[in-house]
Amino acid sequence: MAGGLVYTALESTSMATAEIYGKTLVKLGEQNPKIVALTADLKGSTKIGDFAAKFPERTINVGIAEQNMYGMAAGLAKCGFIPFASSFSVFASLRALDQIHTDICYQNVNVKIIGTHGGTSFGQAGSTHHAIEDFAVIRSLANMTLICPADGIETGKAVEAAANTEGPFYIRINRGFDQTVYADDKYDFEVGKAVLLNEGNDITIIACGSCVYQAVQAAKILKYDHDINARVLNMHTIKPIDREAILSAVNDTRRIITAEDHSVIGGLGSAVAEVVIEAGKACAFRKLGIQDQFSKIGLHEDLMAMHEIDAEGIVKNALEVINQDFEKEGVHGSAVKAEGAGKAASAVKLAPQGANWVDEV
Image (cartoon, rainbow, N blue to C red):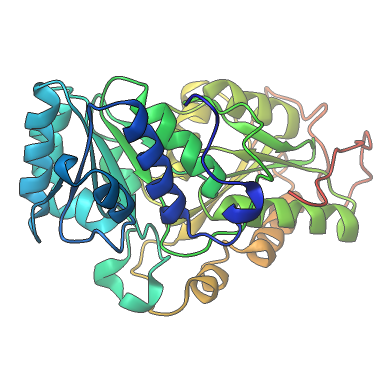
């Protein structure tokens, strides 16, 4: 986007992620008259109302009819427009799946799906509004790009990238006020490329969405309280996933934890595991998320703690994985040695790492 994003870093801390999406879409709409917006009677909740106020003639409210909305979006894309269709993540990925599969992905048309209220971020609304299966569903669709930004700044970058890249996109954002991971937009965002937030050779934490901030905080705790250097990767793009970053982490740390506000089946953790297995690698591995169950109802921060995807939960699991002697247990495989693998069990650290810790991000 020419001229950068349309808000300051200070403003971003007082805006919901969806609000930044709305403001970014307005800016894109000013630059490109082909951008249109569709909503399923959720103009206010998904913050697409900013675009509607600025460009009422380029906004369509289809009513509570998500299936129709995505079918219409496909038709608009076939006519040369760039439609952004917004709804709650759970409705976009499940209720309208047939239309996304057949009308959008099968035809490989240029539709951008913005799924708001992702994961358990609307936790108090109950299981019908928890989007904990959308990664698994959406990433299985051919031609689809799947992004889960870490905060508002990254949401703006993801929306901009989607507008400027041909093909179907699904961008999943949260309902509420996400913690700020990035102080500004002066960092390289590339679809399909993870962002290294912390150096470390003892263990790697791979996270997306709201879990990224928690992973960074967990890395600080691990360093200051336990002298453990944790690498943190923000895997904002789940499809196509960054194979190079994952395999580098396996080679360097031999211990991987994934953290996501999603079921542990079919999501980020599964995508990372597929890369590791297909490459013939072996490591100590743990997936954090919703453990094959429906989540309870409650505030987002409480649910994250319950499912151990907050900082404390990540630290707890990291320590357990660090203390797992995976060579003796046969997890690693006898053909591969743990040279440079970081810290095992209660052993002395082989090579202390001088990490570039982020005090304020």
